[in-house]
Length: 474
Ligand code: ADP
Ligand code: MG
Image (cartoon, rainbow, N blue to C red):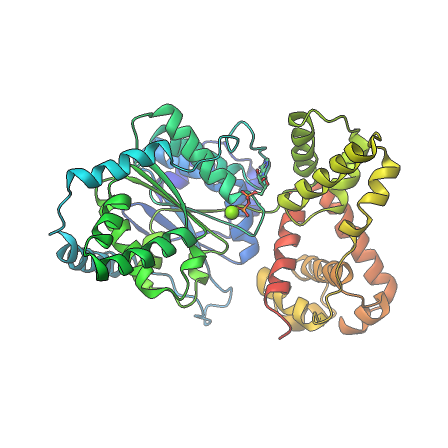
């Protein structure tokens, strides 16, 4: 806490920034390697995380010599509401201790045999990392600078500062690439380290196979255990695939403990924050939450252009900036979709022997750009998601209130509805306390303009859209 105060006095942050972001932030609690800060809404949480948590953490490390992970907790403005209480770190630590003693009981008797070491050794050559998934090929933008920097720090100091590290984010946002870049980086810098990359699905299948062999020959599971518990770096991709797989979760839990206790680096990816993993063992979830949790956001416009340009250059394809901008403007979902569109264009140009002109791009990508109709998305749903994110009520959104706290979320909600549904501006206006359709048009324009100057707004909106879509029609 002291460290944070000092940082604020050191003028690294301007007065304006301080009053904008930190006046509403309060120290909440801390444990050995994390500090929990309370902020008024998800909006604050995301913005502070994107903009400041990396420098704050760095500064704290400098001042205190301890790597600290900042976490945020949302506290309602009214003092009476106690919807989200702050986790007290002490009991948490206790629980963990109990669990780890229990787990070592189970497994301590395992003996490592010469033969089984060999399996790991061979794995070093076959650690399954794609060689093009490097940091050099990873374009950095506001959406991913924090996870990327964390990844580079891990490469420098595996098993030390950020352990475990969990990277989460939606499909196609670069989780696998980043995770493998960490693996490749460590491999280059520490060639003796045994690195294993494994998709959760493969882990599950191998484990099931191993149990099968155990029943037959009696060696399967111990071989499996030695394969994953005797590595220096374990990278497990897409851990959401473990949902509902109880016995594999159990196995991963023990693997986790064995590696963590001997300071081996663990990196995981997930399509959602661990807190949202339903049907998941609590103690395993708490392990994931223990270290650094960072999220990858959808790239903003500039970053999308940079990614496309990067790909075009690496494929030695000539394609004008106009066309790249045109594509980046129309494909906002994720990087995989961007790549797919580029591949499609290149293939077309190649097959018909034409240059990639704007004309070609427009006709070839017509289908890619068409927005699928979202029939089950209601105005109500969007209002609920947006209100919750900004910590206002849906009643506020429909009210006559014109304070900035309310008008901005209201405009964002209108913009999102316009983007992802077929409701007319008149219909939308009616659902916002009977406002005129010109007000809706004005709101949409305003948000659109803002996205060009505020680089984090678009990812925020994309995230909200994702939440709306994922939460279905209810
Ligand atoms: P995820 O695992 O999150 O679904 P991937 O890591 O498979 O996403 O990324 C999808 C594609 O986009 C991959 O081909 C990857 O190389 C590319 N990609 C993702 N992020 C970046 C980035 N920041 N710069 C360049 N290419 C990227
Ligand atoms: Mg992936």
